Each structure stands twice: as C-alpha cells, then as structure tokens.
Length: 518
Image 1 (cartoon, rainbow, N blue to C red):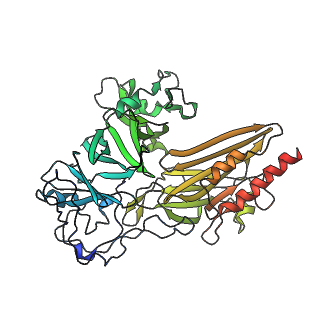
Image 2 (image 1 turned 90 degrees about the horizontal axis):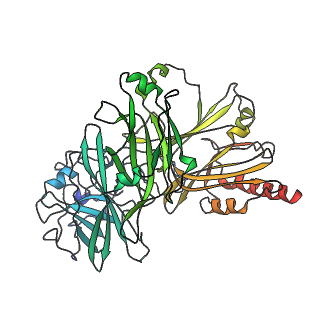
Image 3 (image 1 turned 45 degrees about the horizontal axis):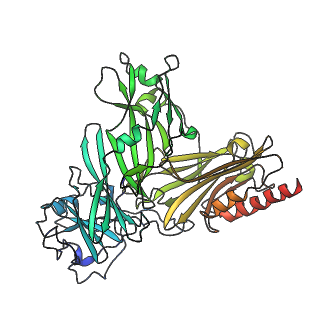
C-alpha cells in the first residue's frame, strides 16, 4: 500500500530548482527553511484529485499528469512519485544534493509537515511551519522510496509529535519497514524506534496444532488487554498448500519478513504477514497466510504498543489454478465513484454491481425476487488511470435477512470512510451492528448489540452512528426486509443519489414506534 502523500500544487518557478536551505548542516536547528522561488504563487492542479471534497460530490475520476519531467529529476519510481512536484524532488535527486542543501522528500496527509534530506548526511529534517528539527533517521533505500510522515498531538500535551516510517530492508521474500516516534521536548527532538513490533505481534498469536485429518490450523489472538478475541479467531485451510508441497510437513507459523507501516486518519498502523514454516525449508511460505493489522501508539512510559487486531486470511491464486476457469456471474454496474478510503492520497474506485436473473428497470422490485443480489467493491488505484483487478474489499447485499446490510460513504476530519451497518429482527432478537472501516481490513469504530424481548430501540447505536454519518453522507445501498414496502432496497446509481438520512430517519422512527407498541 502506497502511503506517501504528495502536495497537490506545483510551483512553476520550482520545476528545475531543488530547494536550498539556510541550514548550514543537518545538525543546525532554529533557522527557517527558505524556498528560493519568486513565482511560487503561480500554481496548478496536477494528477489525481485529493480526497477533500464531501463524499457526495467526490466523484472526480483520477487523471494522470501531463506535466513534463524536469531534466534533473529523470528517475521516478513508485506510485507516490507519479505526481512529482517541483518542490518535492525524487529520492534519487535528493541523494545527489551535497551537505547543506536539502530537497523535500514527502508531506504529511494534510500537507502541513514535510521531511527534507540530502545524500551527504544520514538524517532527516522535519519542517513544520517555522519550526525545523534534525532527526537521526536513516531513510535511503534501494527502492528510492521516500519516508512517510504524520504529525499530531498524540500524547495530549498540547504540542505536536511526529511519526516517520522508512524502508529498512528488502530482498527475496523480504520487505521490512521501520517506524519512528519523534517527541520534541524543550525544542530538542527525541527519537524512539519501534524495534519490538514482531515480538509484540507474536506474543498475541495462539496457534493450535494442525488438525491432521482436515488440514486446518485454528489460530486465536489476544486483544490489547490480554484476553482471547473471539471475533478475530481464524481457521486456516492448509489442504491445497500441503498438496502443492508434497513431501514437506507443517512445522509452525512465522513472521518477520513482511512488516509494513501505514497511516490512516493520521494514526500509524502496523501490518505483518504471518506465513507457514515447513519442515526442511529455510524460508517462510506465504501461499497460505494471514495478515494482521493493528494501530500503533506510544505510551506515557515511552514504549510502543499495539491495539486490537484485525485479521484477514489469504490464499494465493497459485493454489487456486483449478478454479481459474470458473465462469463469473454476469453483473451490471449501476454506480461508480472515487474516494480516498485508504487515506494514502489516492482515490480508490468504488463500484456497486447487481446480479439480476431477469431484467427489470426497477432495481428495488428486481431485488425482491429470489436469486437477485448485489455487491459493493473497492479497487486500489495503481496509477496511470488503472485500478486493481481483485477488490481490496467487497460486501454482498440482498433484501433477505441474510443479506441485510447498509453501506455508507462519509467523511470526518477530512478523511473518507466506509460505514457498514446491519439492523434486523429475527427469532425475537433485534440485532444492531455498525462498523467504520478501511477497505484494507481495519475497523476504526465498531458497535454490536442484541436486544431481546420487548426491547427494539437502541439509542446508543444511533448516537454512535451519528458521530460518523452526516445528513449528506452518501448511502450506497440499504437492503432491509423490515423497511416499509417500496423502501426495502435503496441504491445510489449513476443516475440517482441517496443519502444516509433517507434510511436512518425512517429506521430510527420505526424501531422507536415498535418498542412503544410492545
């Protein structure tokens, strides 16, 4: 996942100028970073639109820049370099700068903080308004990937702290990033490196013995309080892996070769891939594996810690070759929109599709019929106007109880979010569930409750949801067999837009009325 945020303006006077700083050396602090540009006011939009518009209007299709590349910035690598700016040079160009001259490597998501560097000094310079801090963070790597930076008052002391992530190691089957926390105390930056991330993940993974009959590995996980998190337990099917690797036997799970950090909503998250150790094999096998994601925070004791896990299993297409020729259902796309749901500065493509056994112009009426259903899918932006083939996230829906779901697109504090809810009644129980999530499988906020007997209305559910949804939050789809006739399915299409209030207002009043009657 590419996470380096690029500034969305190009200073025309800087197209061939690498910023020269008043710093005489990386160890100097306190002097303002000066960009020597007399035409910096002349700017133009470039590349993909940044995701700052409200979701209801954030429908601009990403474009590729046609700006000619500066002659001295000829080497571009990675998606985050696609929109190279005059005042953000490529990593390779920065490496050519001598001591005392600096180039901008990357920006924070809100573009208020940047990190600078050169090829002569093993450090970075954080530039935040009129403040600058030299930090001893190694950032140069073989992939020419710039460091990522985010800033906020993470410890609540009234001052900003900074998180910086960099690539630390790469190779065959290896990709490891590092995370640094910078706390400025009395003008002096203190740098802490998260060196125990693998150990922190490992101590919370409880892998049971492999079931030799069914070739299934049951894995439990501890939550941040040390209790078993039943919602995240998985059963990993090793059948096809063992068939493909005949002659080898399962030994254990393992990790450490795939460690990445990313920022979502300004919060750092750690991602580790957990592979399989096979007897008589030196390297981990990832054809069958699982990905664990957890938020990272710095405690008052000066130690890093991980929040609750989100776990996703993964089976390589290499193991699914026998299924590759299966015919996919013929789906009709009814809506396409673009939103930065991964908070990396690039908009993913959101697509709503429906499967109809019989053509029907009225989607609500069509979805009432058995066998008709739909799906919402999110596809990663790959650059040059291209998107991934396999969705980052998908959710099926139908009017029947089993398919009851509502999917919203909303925005909070400048970031786009997916919100998925499920409200239905069955066998005397009212189910209330909402999940504010990222399409790369992490929940920012989750609520679940079950009411039994005469209780039907849960005010806490609606209060929590209202913290995320506004009146103009987009309603992608709402399927609910308990809604009044004609409103069992509400879909936003390319021709017709619906909003969160259309469903939630009716549903809230409905649940309150039912409880009053009973």
